[in-house]
Length: 382
Image 1 (cartoon, rainbow, N blue to C red):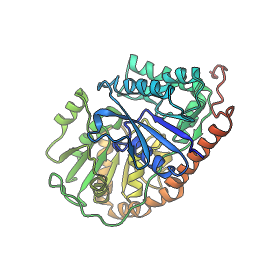
Image 2: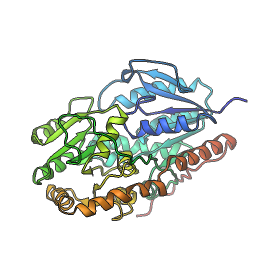
Image 3: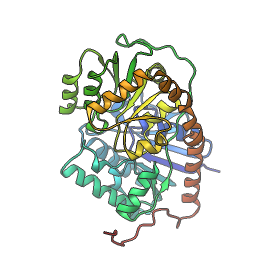
Image 4: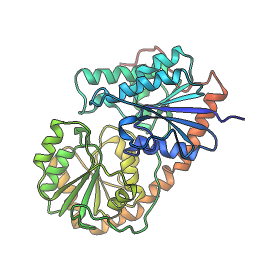
């Protein structure tokens, strides 16, 4: 008996692990490979060694136009065309930026789901025409995909209010690893003496405000893990603002090296503001970090309000105050470290997440009429 075939489109691919979506692909495909045959569409430029089968997972390589706007769409377009002529039981897309492709898959009569991720049209990274494109792409996701997947209750609520659409709430997961890990020395980082940021260097993540606030504190070091694959004015501004206490590592592909940075930081600073369940924040919880987070509904949902974090707002002075608070209250920092993994074990285990995806796939395959996206044309209430 053949395994049902699941195609995953819209991420950087596998076994590439750059960010949350790629970690999600790795965990899902490897964790459910005994039940399903996974096919992952991968960016050709990101892989030097190209094998068609890795860990039992089928990989399809396509190139992309590497610009801020076109990278994902150009890759997804090719992947979608290829998928039309393949015998997949389910197409699983990542990000509503790919919502436009739902028109094609609906016309082909394919069973589809899409992880809507965050609210791209509200992010400072995008503005003007780009923001409008992302908004209407989200509306197309609502209209043409069989199932919408929200990774946080706040995202689910937004889609229900804004688009009159229902969705499945399935978060991301994380691993709990609190054993001592020696810090792999990078740029003379001081173990236990640095604050850590992990994420793309974009306005959404408030890195400029974090650096300005850090410079007003007495903290020793700020380590920033992340990069951009293209030239960007905001990145240049970040570089100019940083002083010699700010260390940029670029992307770190070695998961053990990244884990060591989490485990040995004094505190993790999370500036992300426009997403749902953020994988970098999940890792910080799973690795037992003291967490300083931007004050928004997504981070408060993940941290259970004040139970697992200290918050700051958009102003550098607020960032500085939160850093000073941790520096002068080591007992609070230690308490936050000790109880951080509890949040993962209670709400964000991969075992729980994979069980939810297993149930989703089974429903889509067994019942050709089942949908979770109860979209109507009813105008939203004023």
